[in-house]
Structures are given as structure tokens and as C-alpha cells.
Amino acid sequence: MCATCGCGDDGATITAVGAQSGHDHSHDHTHDHPHAHPHTETIALEQKVLAKNDMLAEQNRQWLTDHAILAFNITSSPGAGKTTLLERTIRHLSPQRQVSVIEGDQETLLDADRITAAGARAVQVNTGAGCHLDAGMVERALRVLEPDSGSLLFIENVGNLVCPALFDLGEHSKVVVISVTEGTDKPLKYPHMFAAAGLVLVNKVDLLPYVDFDLDLCVQHARSVNPGVEIVPVSATKGDGMDVWFKWIDARANELHTTVT
Ligand code: MG
Image 1 (tube, protein in one colour):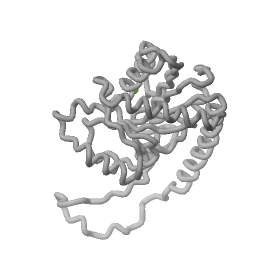
Image 2 (cartoon, protein in one colour):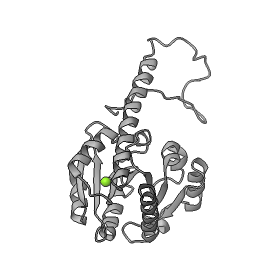
Image 3 (tube, helix red, strand yellow):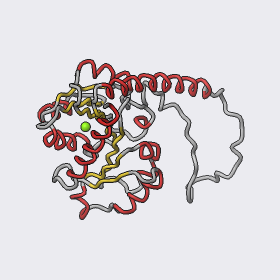
Image 4 (spheres, helix red, strand yellow):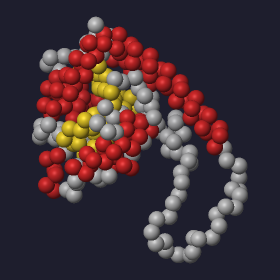
């Protein structure tokens, strides 16, 4: 349960699929709920939280754009390889330009330590009970980081494909990482996140011979929720496809430069 966005609050629909064990479920479920629904207040609070977040996110984006700082919001399930991807990316890019990272995790400084060892400036945001970063946290982190004009900023979100889809951080693009050790159907199960993606990286492709993952089908699923989205298979540990990812970053940097000048 998330303490800040209330995503643990129930809006769920429960649907029985296939044969159910036990007693007959065909009886009428239309009886009155035993207690009043606090649903209306929940939705109002959620809208207020999101509206405030969107306002702060727009301020972040304006500040980043004014300073020609290209910002990406990197999201994935836990363990898809975001930090490993960033380590390799930083080692490749940081000799030419400054790279900064805002690291989001519920606890520990472990990832920020890895990022600084790779050669980037980093701040760690620990969200405690929260399951996502929000625009206010990013604003505070930017005050600490003070990234140079013209630099690159990666925001590594908390590993979670649900709430980070709702919270704009002020980035220029969302990059969703999925790994081949996950289910091929992930884009269908988490459509909001994949629909918001500017790029999908399919990581750990070096493991394809050993896992049951259909890359073509995953691409098909991702495009069914986000037609035309760019999808790049990569291996952050072995290096496959990383040149395509670096070229994609360069293309976004050129776009931003054109906007600013
Ligand atoms: Mg990480």
C-alpha cells in the first residue's frame, strides 16, 4: 500500500474466471454493501494530489528545458535491470557530458552508491512507504543535485509499473524497461505505463535462449497499447543494442536543443 497516492484503496473489480472450487457462486451479489463507500472522497483526494503533482511537474519540465537538461524517467518492475542499464549508460556517456541521476527506492542508498561509482552525480530519494517518486521529490532532489546546463538527467523511479504511470515528474520522456525474465504479456497487464512510454527497452536479451519469452509477441502487445512506440532489445550486462539506446538519447538531445535555441 502506498502512503501518498492511496493506491492501496480499493477500486478493484473481482471477476471469477474458469472453474471455481467450492460452493456455487451464481447467487445474487446485488445486496447492499454493509458500510458506506468512501469512494467519492478518495477520488477527490486523488484528483487533488495528481493536480498538484502535475503543476509541480510542469514547473520541473520548464526549469529543465530552460537549462537544456534532458531528463528521462526510467520505470520498470523491480529487478528488470534499471540500475545496471544506467551504470553502463553512464560509463559510455559521462566522458562527453555530465550525467546526473535521481535514484528512487523505498529504502537504502545502494543504487546511488553504484551510480556514483559509475561516474555520475547522484541523489537517493527514499520513499519509505511510498511506491513511486512524485514531482515534489524531484524538485527537492534537483536543488541538491544542481545539474549543469546542457547535462543529462536520469530519474530511476521506484520499481513498480502501476503508480509511476500516474505521476508526471517533469521529465521529457518516460523509458520503460522490461526484461525477458518477466512475462511476455506485461504490456497488456500494465497498459497505462506502456501507453505513456516514449521508449521501451527489452533488457537481458542475452538470456533469451534460456527463458520462455516471445520477443515478437511482446513487441506486438506493447504496440497494441502504444502504437508506433520505439522498442529496443538490449543487454545492459553484455552490451547488445546499447548503441541503439545511445543514439535514441542523442536524437532526444538534438530535439531539446532545437526547442531551446
Ligand atoms: Mg535500481
